[in-house]
Length: 41
Image (cartoon, rainbow, N blue to C red; front, side):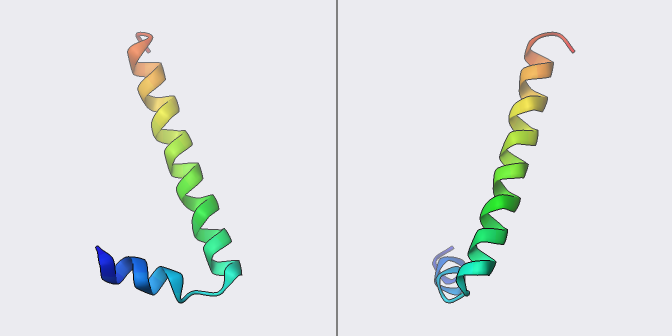
């Protein structure tokens, strides 16, 4: 896990921003999926 974090911290700011937006999209998709299942589809 730590080597992934170190590799991430070595990336340029643009790559951090790109990865951050990508993970944010993943979190939003998972959250909406969970919400739709919890509400009965």
